Image (cartoon, rainbow over all chains, first blue to last red; front, side, top):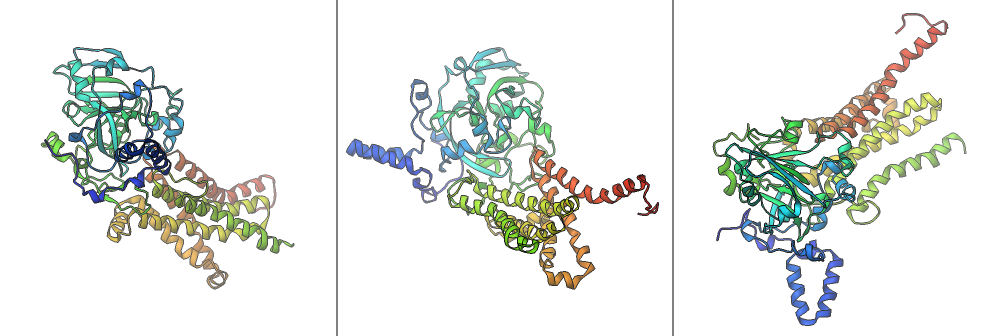
Length: 329
Length: 215
């Protein structure tokens, strides 16, 4: 079996559970443990190992309670559910990091349909259920590096994008995959302001899209993806800056030409199409050499060095071996 | 109470306490007390809050003169020094938070950042320019510098421009908030530039005996 992805860390570096389990949950677990007696205590220990929030209920929710795939998971401690769901860049719901959690409350991720079109043999519009039915979900703990020089570690639930793409049989003309976010200012109040050209568009080169690390996420922390994190379907490309991870996807198009993506179109000097995490290529206005890791409970947390390809260089550097990464940033 | 006493015992203490409220809320938030929640990224929240408060106080300082001219109340001037000093206080706090919480007091990294990042260079310049104004804000310095004091303190216009510029340059895309500050600053500086000429134009139109061609 291969080594887990990402940098190796010592067990002693891992944040103690007590720091990221909130007190209320510890008390609840403690009560549950007391009620269940000796087996309860064992369960308590097991529960404390998996830092998931209060369990979701219902048959649909059960689908998200999946095993972690260690092959594609880093060993670092994930951020808390609270941090992951309250600190979001999702301009469709406002430009402040706290806006999406508030403004996405009225958003309806069901029913949902996704259109697949472009250079592929199979095309059409599908309900999300039909699209997801044949796919096996798994949990992957990925590092997330924002272009704004902060980072998190997130336990996504999802499936490899490649598993979805192969069903649509893209033709030899399909060189890129473009994704589009829902365009509906009624549900996404941030779209009333022309901060970006709506709808949000992102894209990948075909080999990037087919890479086993590239994930479509439908959940986080063993739960259905919250609206502010891009429900019901979002992209996760852990070796690229976070803005590549397009949220609330309604269209997947196979194209021959490189798509014009939102951020690289809005400010081509500052954001490239590739947007690979690269400590050697600074943003024109700030350094990308280091990052602040969100959370940990301390105001005095030290910056950590940013790793080439966000720590996934061994797995993805080959995709770019003949490219000048300063030019194609 | 006469005017002197009202300013001394009521207005000034009120402004003093009001100006401390943002710092108190941030300190409370950092320790988990009070209404201010700093969120998942408390460092960024504190950094941004100190910067914005410094800018707000700087603009308030610049508002004193127009308000005095509009209301005809010369006593408003008594509040200006305190507002200016608090602007300096929050700007300094903003820098300390950046140097300590953001950069971990890594002096080499800070130095590199200041030289390399134009928006940090500009912010740093604004802070350094505020320093002589804070130092010379005492009555004694005012007396000592005489007419040069006024000249020196005109630096505040440059500082305000640098401060708003610093804000503008560090946002990713959504410039609506910085734009608001540009607009407010434009009004405050525009008032100073246009007040004289406009008044002269008005008085000469109404046929009073202003000498033509005076600038």
